Structures are given as structure tokens and as C-alpha cells.
Image (cartoon, rainbow, N blue to C red):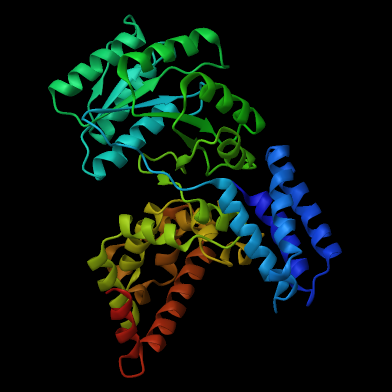
Length: 443
């Protein structure tokens, strides 16, 4: 999401890093560019003014001027102030008697229905018994969509069609939750194309009848400055307790994420990072600030890997890699594991320095290359995968036809595979040092 902002900020910091000593004029020039980068990213003007003022107050002080690496010190200050601007991390408040009600509100098209299903999956993993409520009786097929999602994620859905009023549906759902011992009620309310009084009155009635523990605004990160106005109006009428930003994996400029938190004073609780039902991340301001500044986000990457990969299988595969006796069948399994973590472009952004190193390589190309590799290996027989040496010219032509690729691409994959085998064999040598290090990593 913050690709453009990240690139501009990195250009500013690269210039600062080349200076052995910083003057106040240097800091002013850098902050002028930071200000422009934030404004172009749709960050609220007042927020930008306040942010750069705070950074300057610290950047022209002793902590920078007396530092051995003033450029790095300025980056550190920008990071810290960005974390302050994004606010403290806040988790879902599920205190109080069961069932706790969570009300999802927002404009039409913001992704409320999908987010409701994602949140249900997340809550179930933490030991809760969620009940989804189809309270959007206006949007065509909204009730059906939630019912389909409920079946997909194996979470029950309370629906009464489109004839019953939403406040009554929500009240009936709460009664059902009490009778059936559900611990959390997730209400998917109706959205509109714009904020209007009738919609707000209906939401106020739902809130009055169900006393929700959380009122979460689901906001599309791609709506820019308009999202800030929407958030303010919802907060004024309903008293929001949190924000969920959706479509964070898109090409939005990202300013809404920074602005909404500051303007409303309401914490961001989750980020929607994809279409899949598990693509909902807890919000950590320090991690997002690191991503914005191009510093990566290793902690989130580790959490993704732990959630998607089998530890024993990963250790077994690593042992085979070190010994150099892994084959294309093993490689295919690892490729499928990596795909569970999300788009490759997102993973590159989480590794410090790697997104910059890969700059100029389109994310679509990288992901397409992975699809081609998978297609090539799937077009091989089991014998060929386990012993690639038997793949002669005739077999290569058959594999290329079956995978929709060229013989050159098949040759390139086999060459890279042999090179990796040789490299891993060398790493695994040296009296078992490689395996010793490996066992430490997987403890």
C-alpha cells in the first residue's frame, strides 16, 4: 500500500545518510520533502504539519547534532514519531458477560461482509464461539454472501431474509446467542454509498438494542481523504471503538491509515491484507511504521510462517536441503507452502532491504514466475521429479507443452535447481556445522 510513500522517504533518507554532519538547513530541506511525500500519500494536512513540527524539534536538537551518524538518527526520530502518530496497539475488547457484541459499520463496498467472516475465523482460533449476523437487508445478495462465507469458514450465520428490520434481526440474533452459548456476536450491518441520516438512525437503534462491546468502522484504505471525513461522521454518531482498514494489499497511497487514527482518536485494530478468510492481521504501529520507512517487518513474516507451515515438515525439508538430496517433488511442496503466506511481493516488503533490492522487478512477474515453476514441475512424472537427471530433450519438450512454457524455461529451472543443490551441499559440509546451526534455528 505505501510503496510510493516508501520510495520517496527512502530517497530523502539516502541523501541524509551521505552527509557526515547535518545543519539545520539540511534538516529543513529533508523535512520539506518528507512533508510533500506525506501530502501526496493523502495524509491529512494538519497531521502532516504537526508531524514535521515534532520531528524538526527533535532533529535540530543535541540527539542528532552530536550523533556519529546524524542521518540514521533522523530516520530513528521519524520512525518513533510515526509510531506515535499511528497510536498505541489495541486489541478487541471481549471483556464482560457473554455473549459480547461486535458491530461492523461502514460505507458500501468497504468490505464489511468479508471482514466479518475473517474476524469470525480469527476469533474462533482464539477459542471463541462466534455467531455471524446478516443485518444488511438492502444490498442485493448481501445475506446470501454472508451465508456462503459462513459455510466456507464453518461459522453459523443468523439470517432472517430481507423482510425483517435490521434492528429486530440483531436483537433476535443476540437472543439466539444467549440460548446457544455463543461467546461473540458479529453483526454485519448495511452500508450506503454515502453517509445519510436514515442509515445512521438505523445503526443507532441497533446499538441501543444490542449494547455492542465494540463498534468497528470498516474502511477502504483506497478512499483517501474521504475516508477521514467518513470516519469522523461515524464516530460522532455511533461512538466508534476501533477501525479495520481493508484492501491494505492494494495500490492505495496509504494516507487514510495514518490520518483516520489521528483525526478520530480511535485505534486501528486490524488490517485486511487479502481476499482469503485468514488475511486479517493484528495492527502493530511499530511494524507498519517500519514498512512505511522501508525497514521491513520480520516479526509479521515469522508469525505468518508459523501459522502456515508445519514445523516438523519444515525441519525435515531443511535437513534434506543441507544434505543436498532434496528433489523437485520436495521443491514443489515448499513452493506450495510459500504460497500460503500470501503474494511474493508482500513477503519481499517484510524483509529489510529486499524490497529495494528487488526494485524494478514487477510483483506480477515474480508471482507469475512462481506459477510457471509450479506448472513445469506438475507436468513432470513422479519419476522425473525425484530424479531430474533422466529428463532428456524429448521429455523437456513434453513438459514444456504440458505446462504451457518453453523448453528454455524448463532448462532454466533445471539449471537453477542443480545449482541450488550444489550450493546447499557445500553449506551442509564442514563436519556437520550446517546441521548444528539448523537445529538451533528450529528449537
